[in-house]
Each structure stands twice: as C-alpha cells, then as structure tokens.
Length: 429
Image (cartoon, rainbow, N blue to C red):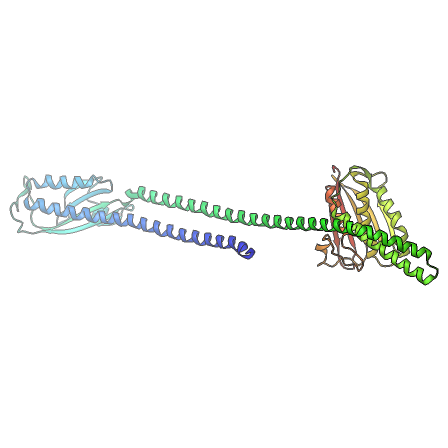
C-alpha cells in the first residue's frame, strides 16, 4: 500500500503531461483546420461570385433589354461585397465593356490576371453564341449592340477581409492554450501538494510510532522499577551483610563481585527511569565554565588512570545560560564519559565553551576511535550502543535534555579521527 501511495503522484503527473500534450496537438490541428476552412471559404466565395455574374450576364444578354445598364447594375451589386475590389467585363478584343468596384480601370493586375498586394484575381472566359433567342442582337444602348463572341470577366477579390475571422480563431486558440497551461500548472501544484502531504503524513506516523514506543518504554520501565527495586535492595542488603561477616578472603571476593554486579543493575535501572520519566526543566543561571570544571574534576581520576589528558578550554570569566544545572551536568557528564571511554592511552579529551551570536556552544572533543558512518545516524536511538557494557541510553537521555532546553545536540565523527559532540544553546533559552 505505501508503494502504491508513493507511485500515485507520479502516475497523476504522467497522465497530466500526456493529456496536456494531446490537448495542445488537438488545439493546433483544430486551429489549422479552421484557418484552412476560412481560406477555402474565400476561394469558394470568389468562384461562386464568378459563376453568378457569368450566368447573370448571359441571361441579360439573351433576354433582357437595356442590357448595358442592367449588366452594370449586376456588377455594381456584386462589387458592394466587402471582399470584392473590382469587377471588369472585357470583350474579345480586350476592350472594357462594363466595370464596377473600387479603382476598376481595366489595367494593371486586372488586365494581366496577376496578384496585386495579396489580392486574389480570378479571370473567367465565356462565350455568347449567335443563337441567343429573343432579343439577341439587340443593343446594349443606343448604337451599342452586344454581338456574340468571347468575353472575359476579371474579378479582383481581397481574402484579407476575412482577417477578423482568423483573428477570432487565433484568439480562441490562445485562450484555450492559456487555460491548458493553467490546468497543467494546477495539476503540477496538486501533485506537489500531494507529495508534500504524504511526506508530512509519513513524518507524523513516524513521530506517532516513536511517541507510542517511548510511552510503552516508560510504562515498562516504571513497572520494572517498582517490581525490581525493593527485591534488589533486599538482595544487596543481604550481600553486604554476608560480605562483612564472611570469615575467609575467597568468600569476600565473591560477595564483592555480587555487590558490584548489583550496583551495576541498580545503575541501569536508574538509567531506564531517567529516560522514561518526564523531566521538568527548572531554569536558573548556569555558568558553563564552572560546570565543565566540575565534570573534569569528577572524571579526572578515571582519565588519569587510563592515561588520557582531560582539559577545559573557555574564555575568561563567566559564560552563563538559563537552564537546569542538574540536567545540564548530567548531559555533559554523559558526553565526557563517552569521550574518555572512546580514547586509547595517550589520547586527549577537551571540554570547550564558545560564545557566538545568539547562541553558546558547549563541545566535547576527543581523538578516539570515532564512530562508523553507518552507525552515526543511530547514535541517539534508545538502546543503540557499540560498547560491550553500554546501555545505549546515555546519548538518548542527553538529546532529550537538550530538546527540553530548546537546544540542539550534534555529533560529528569519523573512524580513527575522533568525535565532537556539540550542544548549541540559544542565549534566549
């Protein structure tokens, strides 16, 4: 199910991209078809006007009277169309019989059938036969007979008069593309929002699982403490009494081992309780330099016995923060004890205090064996330890103390290059 949830945004994004490309192609095809239809409509209209005029001229010449005026009226009517520039009727010798329209002089493009400034010029030849029936041979006007023969009709047509239609088509296509871009942007934002929501849900689930685990641990530790503490105290009391009353040295050595192991169990039990029990931070001024001196004094004998140099480095004077003295001391003691245990004979451990802008850094540095890169992300996990006799709770407790003070605890380490644990305490904390 989690895999399906993670793949769903990708499928949605792929579907959106494919749909967007398909719609772009569809808009392009539809726009091209519409523009082509406009161009074909202009050509079809010119052909229709040609056929209409030729038919009208033949009808007037065959049956009509006052032919010149009537043919001129037909051409004038056609020339009123916004796309018609001029109409010219020529006889077989090329002479202009009748013309109508804007600038229809019978010369230039109209005469040659060429294209003038993007105009569509169409030339149609037709015949008036001699057997034209009633009225044939009648005069177009006084002294102007219309003899049978070849005639030519020249139509100058302006296709650009349909530019408004093309502009509307292009505008609609542009609006469609803008809407498509908006939809694509919305789909992308939706996918990002879905991914962000899923990441938040995973973080919430992890935090909830962690909280539930810690709560279970707290209940378990509290129950164990009540069940174990009293019997353990009684056992230690009997062991202590046996140790004191034992007559021979071998028995006393064994009871001494019993007392040592019972003390170790008690210590681990207290660590469980310290980790599981909610702890209130009782803030008061704490001098970090003085705190480092106290921890160095406590660990000095152990460090000296192991041949390790333990030193404190801090600027002269007090470096004061607001915090719980007991908890900060416990944190620093955990870090310093880990550093001493990580060093070999001849190693060095330094407790450093540095004041910066808006925060104070309390660092514990050692040149010991370091931490493997695969183990470094897990150092704050409860019960994770690389030491044979460690409980795995020291750093977990230290991180909880840091978070309770609004501070951050960082561990930087590399194998055989030592470890630096840094506590960053905001000065406003």
